[in-house]
Length: 156
Image (tube, rainbow, N blue to C red; front, side, top):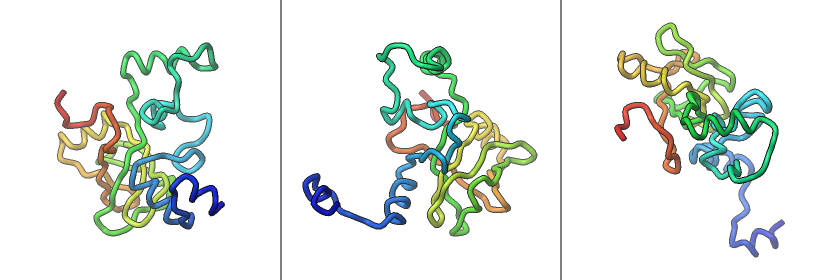
């Protein structure tokens, strides 16, 4: 493993350091941040992270995926979230704004984590001045630096 890493110019780190880095970048992991078979590729940012080949031939679900791509209709996205209190609640905890469900917390490392959020509801919460709360902890979502999807409050 060390030889392979060295040949790539990479550094070996322990799993917790890798997870913290992945989460800080906003890169979701299947099975932790979304359930396989229960999320569309756009919701898991595969369209942003080169996980979908839109030039490929036929595949199962291509109609829905293509429609989401061309209409820009992905309402939910996995995005980084941070907790001001220094820690996030457990994965699977519901994120709410007032009495509306906004999404679900995914994996986390300390005060940084990922959450699958309905971005239209994030926009509504911001417009109403409502915080996003999970397990009694206020969470603040942010758009990943690599993302080019619409973000609440951005003007295009």
